[in-house]
Length: 169
Image (tube, rainbow, N blue to C red; front, side):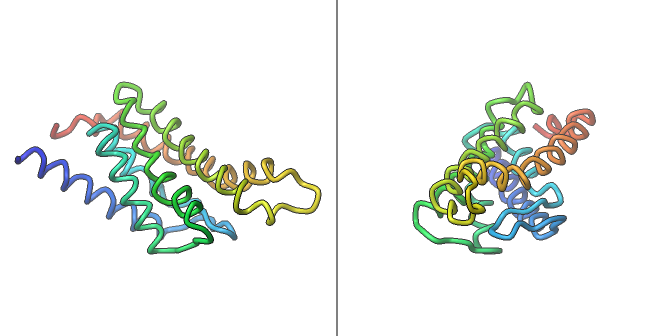
């Protein structure tokens, strides 16, 4: 029971820290999404340490925190794609415990796919006249997720080099 309590406490602390870091924005996109102060790293960290199940649950919780912080909901399916599924995808990093850098890329790639589909289906009307909605969704979502990926990878490299992932296991 003590180990389960430790894992739960670690996940809750990661979600809380991610929520705070999400409020620190370097760039805010007009229809949602932002480049933040490495807000995804705490959830990615928990996923890498504790596995995909804990990571996915922590990611979903983080997505719900983001929903409370800045709700942007037009349709129930869009809600599912942009919040629980997209942020839950961060838990995919847990499948890559031995390759944390690849895990971060796969996890954020999973989040991108969810936002891309949401953008393609629900936000295609925002595309400039004559622009392919798929291209628009890829550019829009990549415009903030790619910098987030770079920042997250950099922070994770520092954590890996300092062997922080293995501490207190």
